[in-house]
Length: 169
Length: 405
Image (cartoon, rainbow over all chains, first blue to last red; front, top):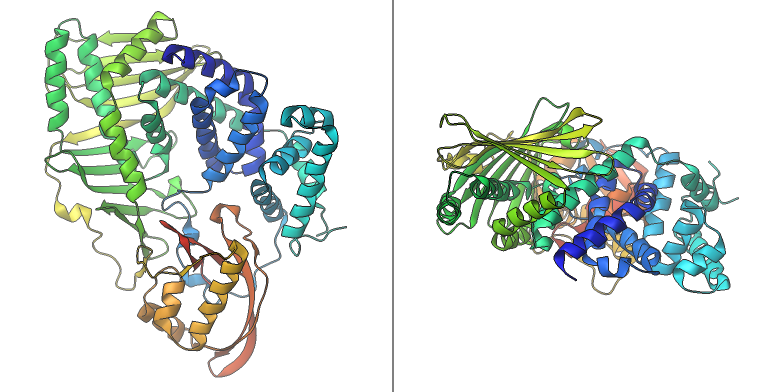
């Protein structure tokens, strides 16, 4: 694709999908700094694969790009994370308080990012975007039954992974 | 707290995206579009632009900005023949060996500050940066020095110096410097100008003591972004670059870069962390034997194994081994730390199942552990509900304890 055409398509895709990507990334990160980094990776992904974002399958690719960006955003934060320093102040710290709501949400967000791709996409669309199953099926290019299956498997995987962190009702 | 996964997910879905986050996304995408519009060598440049805010590589980005600035002004300047200007400018570019600059953020008084030194071949040799606490409140203020693929980060508030590998990012950086084509950048801006998506205004004072002012306004759907560059007429080097958002005729300052000196000798001591407190804790994550190799284990399995071996080493009073398992802390430092608190590890009572760490940003696992300990002669069973374990920075196959215990 000619460079000027590439910019034109990217610009169009950006205008069309920026709100969607923003919402997905914000709900998967919940942190301003990480969101910004994830957004940068997402834009880079959109730029690199802009040819694929100019057709019917664009939404499916966008979810893949957004999920990948979310995952990358946690990496490569040089000196940005104090947890890499053993904190002497915590050496004799007592038992930590039970995780609060914010931590629970953060755990769920992270666990979603670790799901297999289709399950992760399905969960994002179903819950974070509140889409219907037929719409999810259309975007994923599968049957409605399969889309429900992705969501069920994802929920089971999340419950299994977060067992002990959450009191299931 | 009783909370179902679906409840949490539904709540996330219902929560609106804050307006400031929408704005941040708009700004980020606008900047990205500017970047791709300015160069055909998109990959490395964009990568660099993206990580500018996030650490070490910021430094070298500055050098590229300088080059772009001076080339652009020469091309645009009506008083300088283009061919001659290009030749001169390239010569100027290749002559830059040191740079001292600072990065300003809106609403922050203290800037980030950077010193860069290249060798005669133009290869990055040394870097230092001062990062104020506002950049990362969890870390506090940091001093970073980089040399030969390794970065040392001094976390002042925590009294710790961490050494990490930084080869990949620097390699990216150098690739970008080589790949960047300022002539293309200029062409892209001019093309944008022709398309009505950018406006370039140049003020070239006749008084040579005054800087040339170049204003580039990138047109957006909802807002415009403006960059104002001041260029020294004598040296043709960029002195400053400030960014603004223009909404309904109102100008909002977004920050900028000031280039304080070029080619001024930098005291070698700047590239060494000096005057560290005597009791500073040193952690070396570049050592090849830090942590444990994951091998074919799952993340959960290696996390549990590291936790067990860590406490095994403490029980055996093998502090060197325990230090390697907690990110490269020296055995002596660990021994002194524990002795100072009158702690002795007697035996492991239990090592639980690893679960994702409560702080997702760590990308680690939390392992609940129970250990019988002796403190000042009294024995008790202590619980460590979430001992953190994760991959070593720069050595993703090796795993260590992090975040204290």
